[in-house]
Length: 123
Image 1 (tube, rainbow, N blue to C red):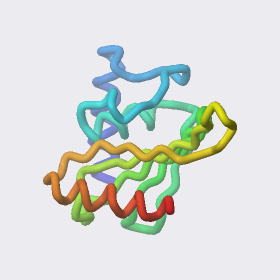
Image 2 (cartoon, rainbow, N blue to C red):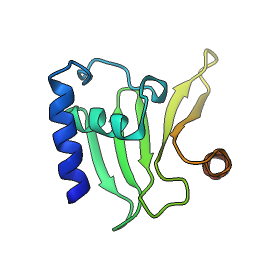
Image 3 (tube, one colour):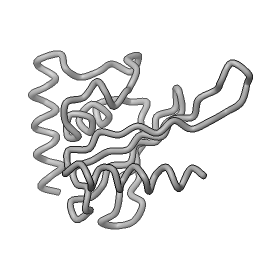
Image 4 (cartoon, rainbow, N blue to C red):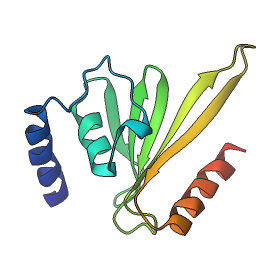
């Protein structure tokens, strides 16, 4: 609860500096400097829904246009702070695929391990 209140206060500060994205702004992991920035922006949007994978587990943010899932790792996770985005995309041939990107502020090896785990899930 303390983290949410801190992030909410941070979001209100950002709102005054026009950093928050409108519902029409594309959401890419590369546009954020920190994981907390990404969470604040996602929480500010009406077109994003949330669920916890399990109590104390990853928080999932689902964005519907285009469909993507943002997985925020919990504090206890070895790669904290990090968010992994999986987005459903379509090639020119019509074939569907999932693109995986991340914003990870942990040590490089921990971030690489996290990405490897998400890539394995896609296979």
